[in-house]
Every structure is written in C-alpha cells, then in structure tokens.
Image (tube, rainbow, N blue to C red; front, side, top):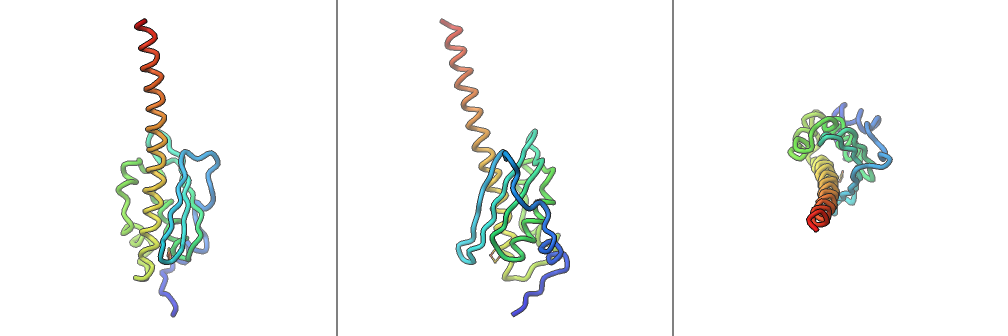
Length: 144
Ligand code: FES
C-alpha cells in the first residue's frame, strides 16, 4: 500500500531542516512511539525564554522526519510559553495534510518539543534553587 504524501511532506523528508544535535544544548530529550517503534531526539538553545535553536535526530519513518523538520522551523523564535501551546494540527496544516495513519508522527514531534522544554525548565528551576540556597546562606552569614 502506498501512502499519499503531499509534495511538501516529501520535500521536508528529502531535505530535512534543523537535523543534527546542538553542541552544549540547554536541554535534550528523546521520545518514542511504543506502537511503531519510531523515535525522535531534540536539543535546544534558549535565550531570554526564546527558542534560539532547535535540532532533531530521527529514528523513524518519512513523516517522522518531515513533521520534526517543519515543526523545528515553525517553533524557532517562539517563546517557551508559545511553544508549549504548539499543536500538532499546525504541523499537518503546514505539510498540506498527512495520511490518516501518519497523524501520530506529528503528535510524536510535539511530544518531543514539550519534553525538551520540560527538561529545560527542570534544569532552570534547579539552578534557581541553587542560587536561592546561596542567597539564603549569604543572608544567614550576614546576620551573625
Ligand atoms: Fe510512527 Fe511515523 S510511523 S512516528
């Protein structure tokens, strides 16, 4: 059975954007689909709460590659809050549709995006806690 991919999907599959890994990323995350076995990994660079760079590696099908490719183009430059609300329907629309049985590939891409943002936020909060501990320790020392 051949799948009816749009020209745009095929173009992103053949020439994926933002493929690879960022050196010294601010966060990284990997997601997988239990049913098809496909996987995606993402790395991001964030500055002033804006996604400055995002790259992906695919271990999956043609639409796994195409959806991650188009999504990275779309979310680069978004704030983290905007990216957290990013929806898989936007990927499907941008690719001029996906075969029904490949919709989950766009969902997996969005799951990866959400996970890498979550990892970034966990790391960021951890740093904040460390800074707070130092601040508290300094205040305690000053009082003595
Ligand atoms: Fe599962 Fe594409 S077939 S991500």
